[in-house]
Length: 443
Image 1: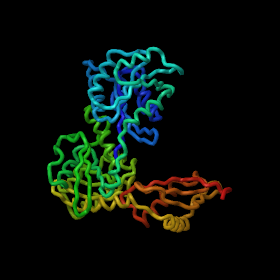
Image 2: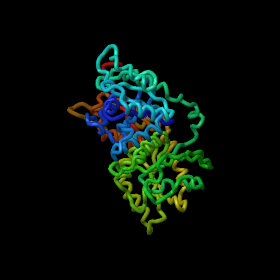
Image 3: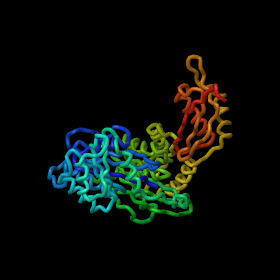
Image 4: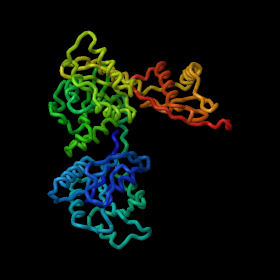
């Protein structure tokens, strides 16, 4: 299930970015006293009372401005409002209610979305200033006094926000056999063409113009290989090339699509080969621990001889060395080459991503691996690995109990990962290691 989206909106210079940074716990948004510093939507993960959600910072809304930049910022904010589950309207105690606040509040009420009214810059402790009560005139219910600089009132604010989140649906358990597949990649690599090929219909708009798909679309397929929900996403570009305000929000939607997917099909263009942007796209899937397949599309358009595929595969193995576990498949969405094989591969990597290995088998492999290559030493002290166990799946996550975590060097972790993969496979899925120290003096 995708995380709820919470948009922070308001007129310029009321402290939206400062509040955003306070809530996510890092300085991700640029903060400046000059109105209009935040132009693009910034987003970050936030957690409150066991609720995980996506927080979106937006540029200030000037309802009637004719300035090009300010009007673009207004459009971005409108898109964020349209796609948000809950909206936080930020106002400024020191300025009081101004005409722009009234206009923004009116715009939000037309959206029919839950709105939480935040009165920022209430920096003094105790009873709020008399000016605080004039914010009731906005007609948005009880305002919440907040100091985004000091953090006062942010707990009350988030308490109110999470009340509007939808209940966790039990459908997830029933639909567990459906594999959610996000088709991701830079623009114009054939993602929508692949969706159309597998569904047998023109389910998605297909065009040679990069960026045709703005939103994500779901296509349910059931065949002899299993049940699949294919999620087509807008192409991900370099941020410097993301100029259109609608496309900026489509990047957030694409990331959310990856989040709710079990498997990511990373499509690259065979006629162009590997690009830096392909590695950025893959990084989103790795970050979220998803099973991955690298699909080389437009293979029908490549001139071939007996060694073309072998040479292409070897080149890609070097380019994608940061995710050497991901299998390659050479397809053509246009002609349908190897689409059946793609289904088989999706089922396989999904099962690998969900694999659970018993503690006994893991420690048997660990014992053989450490006997073959001794753990590293530093200043006469040797790393001891007492045992390991699997903590979770999707992705497979392993916990190592050691005498000193600083001795557990990355190179030795990589060696153990290779040994585990050699025995158990784990094709197409990243694995994660958690290292815990165990005090030798304690039993």
